[in-house]
Length: 295
Image (tube, rainbow, N blue to C red; front, side):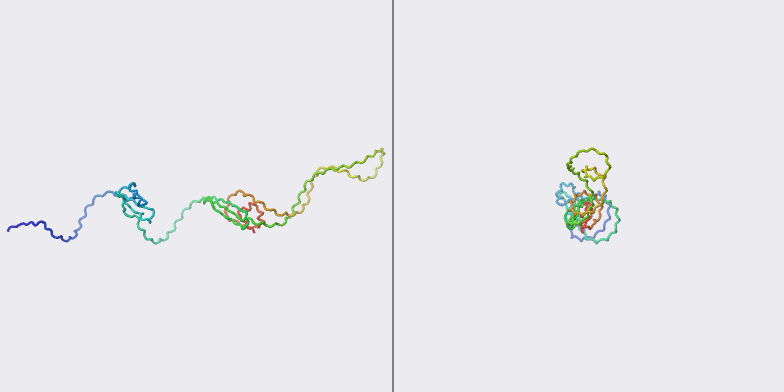
């Protein structure tokens, strides 16, 4: 029987269901080692996004390099943003500033550290002190003013109301010693000589008679000239002490002398004293660093 071949063309039936996953093929051979990649590097840090955009064309950063924003504040949303330089502009890649974590628990107290080495001896400061005393009367007090520097401090002591009220006149003092005798005064003028009586005629000289009794003393002759001063006689007995004169008024205060050398710092000594004894202190004794309280 003869066979007749009939060409029906490409008859495509409906798509069948997806087949099962085939088994994994064997691993292929390892490819050649690639070139060394460049390490991650931030080429430039800007303080703001606007500064970065303004410097795109002139900052010298190559295409494909990274820049970062740091505004100086962790609370700023732009701080930590990472950009890459594209052919036309900078493109944001991400933010390197992570989210702040939760506060952790307080750690245990650490061990005590070793004793540190002895530090160098500090310089001895040069201290300058001045003092003034006014002439007011009242309750004594002092005002201290500190100035200068730590290396050369100054202290100004202003004493006020250190002078007490005028005291009553003291009692009569004892009589002073007898003074030495003064020099003799000048010689007085000689008095006038009286008139001389008439001289009688001289008779003849008779024979020497026997010596008669002594006659009456004749009148005193004229006073002769004062002879030279005799030697100093012995000093007489000491006379009684005369009464003490009244208290004189206090003289004006003398000018302040030059400042003495800095003394060793110590506590101020307080001295109770009567007005009578205070008035008899010298200027140096009144300014020797002690504080006097008038009783």
